[in-house]
Length: 244
Image (cartoon, rainbow, N blue to C red; front, top):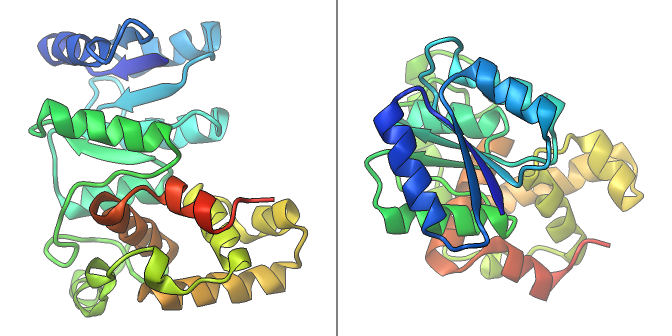
């Protein structure tokens, strides 16, 4: 596994390199201290399996760099590692394509768990109260009135869902959910599964209802929380309905 670390704090960068290298001899870690260096590294060698990205960089906004990387390297998973653990930052990161969010205060075991989940095809988010600090609309995943967002988040029951296996999804809905979690829009899901866009919309709506959420971002967060509690989504997906 080849990992690119992006953090402009030398001590943290060095510590993360040591921790990630501790995963085993099969892991190669490259650390850079700026957005510019990260861009140059990926241009020179795009054969990385994972990017760990800090949100606070001296020469760029981490969210902007996240969007840039997801557009330029859509198959390359990015995990945000940040000093922040605000729900709004977690939601924004996942909404913009991150496959995970790990607070820097997390333990090494938590970081390993997050990386394992991401490399297994899942999405990792830390335990959090989404209603406590959010600036994204549950209906549209875009900036909205904070009070409205808090009320919508508080009304959502996704954190109380028992398990993925108990959702009662059909095999096709399971396929749609798997592609939805990868950030694919309805058109790409339709193309991948050989369905019409309208049929995909119906499946997405059914999946959101089953999860008890009202947006794709909340669905991602819900599945991540369930996976951490009841087992990885990739295992459940394989046993239920592998994508065809």
